[in-house]
Length: 280
Length: 333
Image (cartoon, rainbow over all chains, first blue to last red; front, side, top):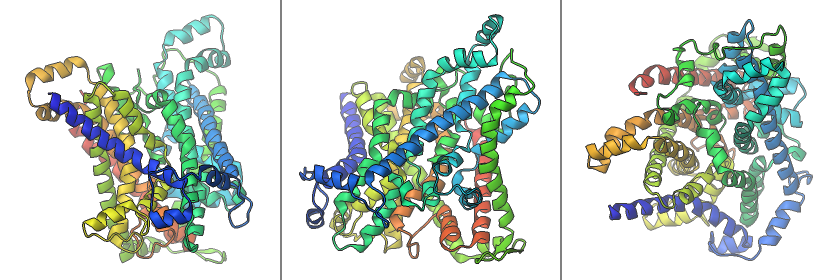
């Protein structure tokens, strides 16, 4: 019994090592100078150039047009992540409210119209989606970056399940008290859903921040680049140079993963709750 | 992870072991076995001639403009040959489809996609399950292991791809050095097999935390009484796992199987794009990447659309197949 426990720990620690080591190495290496990395390879020691490298990456005006800094890209990522998460929550709460709390003709039809979107990911309709954006003149705008990503019913599904688990008595009581649909929604349902909203916010922020393909297509103007989308740009520049700026590439990678990772680590209880919790 | 989140809610039924009788609203939804519970959610409801439409309007507008319109357009333009200079288009019927399906290159990519998906799904699931089982058995340090194992979930696929590139770099990559010890000279970007190998490794690495979270919460939802009964019935830990625990995890595993297949098909785009850097020439790519290359690099609108439609069909067939056939083998109760 005792020996199996030790064996369990060995497996777990090996797992942790596999998951953690690459990122630690990436971070440590980013504090070395490019030439040093080129000579000695990746590193597990502190290189002492942390401030310089990260300062350069955040403030130097890079890209082909020299318009964008790491800081701007971070800001764009933040706008995308927040805009997507907030948009998702608002849209899906409203839609779920209509589906669960109202009796109206065509309800089943709209239910299916919304839920078929779960079947096809954006990736399979990228080209026509891009054309639609062109027609609507929405390329290189924040609207174009965020709104098309909202066209899937994930959040609606979550909130629908959640609303269904809310006791009927609440609505009955509210109606006896004379509350209309708006009042019930704002005074009862929204406060009740707070934890649910937080959990979904975390998942959706991470999802929005990590978007890659869509921002790559939508933004040709470097002023709109996000950090994750910027990764590719770094690589394209990197290929041409003699001693690649490994340190800067790693520094950008670390910056690109920092906010979502922090959110998942700090709010992991809500995050896991949002991901896995069953309907009551 | 677009599809990962897209299908997520299904898991909320899938991991609901705590509640005793598990509910599969989501699965029934797709399987068409809805027990009529979809509309009869509430005994009391509001009735208003226009309010529900008002609440639905924003979501419906976005879905129509950014989901249905492009989907219909993809189907439509797959039957046309578009002039690359914008001088109209000609109806060519099924030509785009037959061209795609007869092309040896396309079939090669389809074969690679199948192998890649199978490998990524298998390894990500089994490693995630192994770690979850071990973490579940360890009482002390459970929270620490959980934290350390899930955070990679938050790393974007292209960022994972970038880190992977560095680890597989010719000059500085530690994995390349390690492989050299065993006489294997890894050349990512030049050698087809080596590139494929590194893509699988990075994609699996990125997906392990997700499977770990679901398996762990599935395991922790198994009631203590069941575990105790199992402990009395079979001595051998492995047999106990195989005959008692694994069947109870089957709904979770089934859900994760779908998620992992869609992950490997679509969400690895970022990993692949970073690792092949637009030079698809001798590198393995997946079907989604081919759609992107033909549509945006090659300006072959019709061909790319036809491929999109083929992908849509694959996704549909996969989903139906999974819900119709595999679901029957899984015991929910």
